[in-house]
Amino acid sequence: MKDKEFHIVHIIVNKRYNLSDTVGGCEDVFEEIFGDVLLSRFYPSSFINQTGVKYCRGILLYGLPGTGKTLIARTICQVLGTQPKIVSGPEVFSSLLGESEAKIRELFSDAELDEKNIGEDSGLHVIIFDKIDAICKRRSANASSTRDTVRDNVTSQLLTKLDGYSQLNNILVIGTTNLRESVDPALTRPDRLEVTIKVQLPNRDDKTKSFHIYTKLKLQHHLLEQNIDIERIICDTHGLMGAHIEQLVRIAINNALRRGLIARETLDVDETSAEQIQINNSDFTKALRKARSMDMIFAKKRNMINSIIYHTRSIILLLRLNKLNYFIQTLFLII
Image (tube, rainbow, N blue to C red):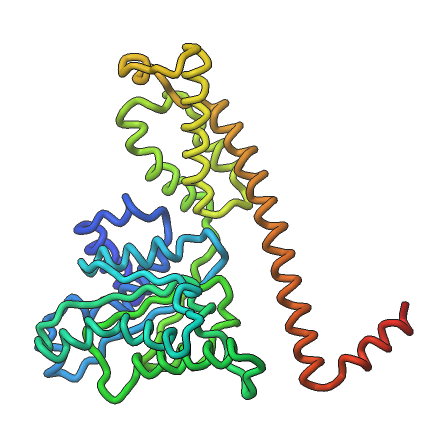
C-alpha cells in the first residue's frame, strides 16, 4: 500500500512539473524524496506549525559519478519553485583564517534574515552542497595539520547551522557525494541531512528515457534520421552512466555537423544547408567509441588518484602510530 501511495504522489507531481521531461528514470529515488522530504512542503506553514509537524531540512544523495545526483537536486528545487544556492565543496575553503567558516554562515544568512523578519511566511531557501564530502569528511580526534583543523571547524559550523538553538524551518540542505563512507556520520543524524538516498546505476529503461529527453528537440526539428536504432544504441551503452547519454548525443551531433562541413567543403553554412543535416546511426557508433575511450581515460585517472589517497592515508596512520620505520624494515625483508 505504501509503495502504491508513493507512486500516486509521484504521478500527481509529475503531472504538474513534467519530471519525465527532465530526469530519465529515477522513479524510485523521487518516490522516496516525495514521501520522506517534500510532502510537508506542499502544506501551508501555518498548518505545519500548529500541528507540530517537522519539516525535513536535509538530504544526502550518494552514488557513483554520473548517476544524476546533481540533476536530481536541481529537479527538487524545480518542484519546490525555488532558486538554489549551489556550492562545490572545495570552493568553501580559504587560506585566510576564519574565512571558510564565514562562507558557511553567509550561505545561511538570507534564510536567517527571512525567518527573523517574515517568520512562517518566509520562502524556502535551498542550499546544494556538491561533493559535500570535501567539506564534511570524517573528523579525527587529533587534527594532523592546519587544513584538518579548518575542515573540522567548517564541519562543526555547518552542523551548528543545521541544528543550532534557532532551527530554521525555511531551509533545505541537499548534499551530494560519490563517497558516502567519507562523510562525517554526525551530518546524517536526525534534524540534519537525515534522509540518505542512494542513486543507483541506470538500467536500460532509465537510459532509454534519458536518450529521449536529450534527443527530443532534435527529433522535433528533424535532426535525427527516422531509422535511428535506439535499442541498439542503448544496448551498446552497457557500463556507461546516465551522464554519458547526454555526452553521447552531443558527440553524435558534432559528428553530423562535421560531416556537413566536409560535404560542402566550406565553413559558410546557410540555413537551407543546415536544415539538411541529420544525425545517423554511424554518428552514434563513432560517438559511442569516443565516449568509451574518454570514460576509460577518466577511470584510469580516478583509480590512480584513489590509490594515491589510500596509500597516503596509510602512511599518515603509520606515522601517527610511530610504526613507519618498522613497516619499511619489514618491507625490505620481504623484498
